[in-house]
Image 1 (cartoon, one colour):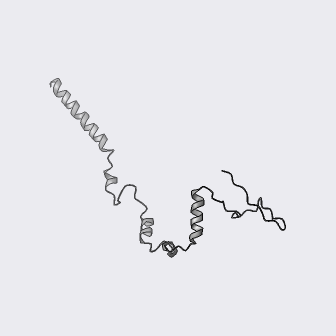
Image 2: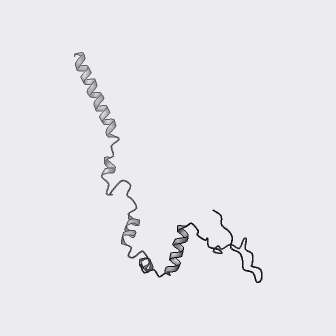
Image 3: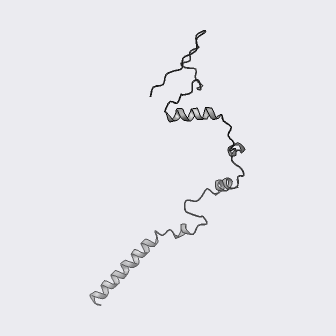
Length: 113
């Protein structure tokens, strides 16, 4: 045999080996699964969420919000001018609480920004 024929056989053998090795890396097994995507897998939770009827409370759909216009206007103006007053006494802790002295109103804490 000639040297060119041996080179062809060697090249063909190398291509067959390379093709066999790369065929082992194929994901054709995973591509033929009965799912939408490879990351799909929580079908039970998806079905529960899809078939839930009215999962929002009825009050969430109420668009008739009753408010006082003067209070709302004052709140918007304080927000716009950056003079928002923080709420006092909304915490559940009694640390730092001091009872007001008799006859005197408790002074609101000053907030510096």
